[in-house]
Image (cartoon, rainbow, N blue to C red; front, top):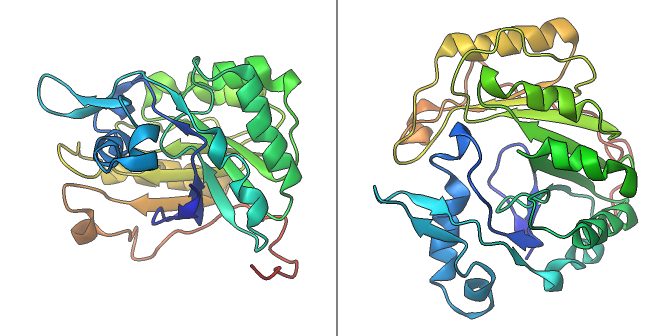
Length: 261
């Protein structure tokens, strides 16, 4: 179901799909796979939703298994939220996974289009499928489209994202695993950067973060620094050059009167 979120750059999560498949180095220590394993063991409706979506690898790490479970019962939840929210879509999956049917993706977009009181953040590691389907989907101004870019080998995702007709296009450089001093920011409206956290977290160099921050400043792109990460991210914090960086694109409801829940 849709719930409040501790993720710093959003306000709520909505998961009409459960499960994923690892596709690049950023997936190695996926927090969502760890959570899916725990949720499956809770039993009941939630347990069934996440059943078989995650497993343990040979070295004991939680990983997504490739099993995709649709949850049509959650599709209408955003319609019941009258107070404007910034909603991360499928924090526990990828809407553009190849096993999510086109018709189901269209239903998700139909709900987002019908909930103009909210802003929806769709993040994918599969922007090529999003582009392939883009002509068959509505792109209202309240749908933000983003892609994950963890190192220079995956910068090509940015070029694909730029061809998608979303009003706001954003990048999630989390976990940031290498330098990207020439990250292409033309036609990009927001950048999130964060270090990996939790068991097995890989280190992030300060210079990698500074390079992207400085490039965002040069292009006038809002920059959001989520965390330094590490095994205990609460100890490393979120400060960069002595301050927090919580910039976001201007939302359509920022200047409007909020509705009561």
